[in-house]
Amino acid sequence: MLQNTTVVVIVTLMTIRIAMLIFVVSFAAITGWLVTREPADNGIAQNPPAPEAAVQNNQEPIAQEKTSEPEREVIAISDAERYIKDKLSRIRIPLVEFENTSVEEAMDYIRLRSRELDPAAEESRKGISFIIRKPPIHSDDASTLDTDLDAPPHPIPTVTGRLENKSITEVLDFICEQAGCRWQITNHGILIAPLD
Image 1 (spheres, rainbow, N blue to C red):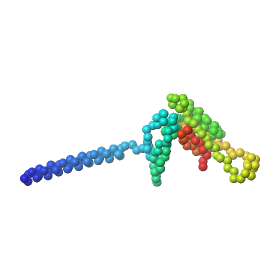
Image 2: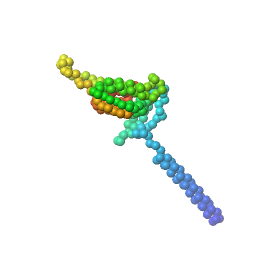
Image 3: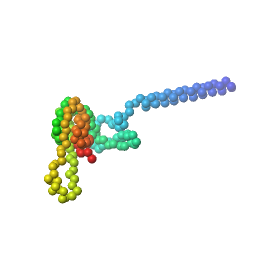
């Protein structure tokens, strides 16, 4: 009887050891997978690339999470905005030269070059649209309107410089830095606006 009890104890201990070994190996495999998988780029949860039809129809934005240091904020980006963002970094302009060029002229040039250099198959999908928002005219008092007519007009910001083999994103950053404005992606293209 003592031998039967010993055999049962030994079998039970072996079963427990095998179960623990399986648990440790499984835990190590899962932990290894979690450590080695690629993190999301820039803390933004990635969605599959936008299908062509979804971009054309300007579907509703998809919420994505972006992590910031102190807190997490949610940024909505639509398929159309994602498509434009991809174009901005993908299309490179071999040479850009500006000499006292207005922002409107610079954006017209970038719009034409983006259309020429865009590898999109469909002609209607080539290029990037630009919308320029001008600063509002402020007048606190109706009596100042007469004196404003005699005053010289506000100086028009211009851009001067030469860039070689730059993405449209880099060119936009350069133009906005010189002209004192900012740009942002919208569902319809790039909005150029004065600094607030």
